[in-house]
Amino acid sequence: MPPDADPTPGDPEPAVPPGAPPDRSIQRALFRYRVMTYIVGTALIVLVFVGVPLQVWAHFTLVAKVEGTIHGYLYLVYLATAADLARRAHWRLGRIVAVVLAGFVPFLAFYVEHRVVVQMRAERAAWAEWEASLATGGPL
Image (tube, rainbow, N blue to C red):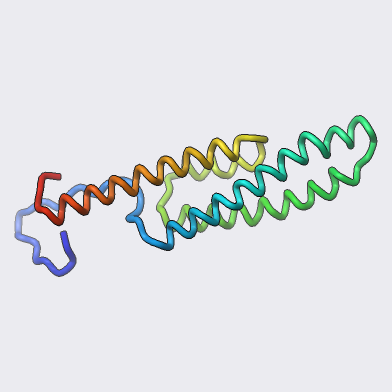
């Protein structure tokens, strides 16, 4: 219902679709989250598949130490961007847990990021459809 319209007594409130209403701040937060996902996911792959084997088999610890430290700090930035997006988009606990775990398992970050983007686009489409049905006065 538009904010300036007077509700008729007895009219039920329309059902609200899941997720948060789309706005520019959510889109910018999603972009920041996606950038950090690719950076952290790539850093984790380098750490696990280059740094750790060099440390274990070649006894060359410098790469693992440096890359591990870099990944650790980047992971904190990734968590901050994910928390910002979760707050703005009103995520449920399951999505938050998946995003947090994605920074620990190689390649999982890319899969979770893809799922998050697909789900958020579907939620944005549901909101657009809901708002259009309110504007036209059609069935919900």
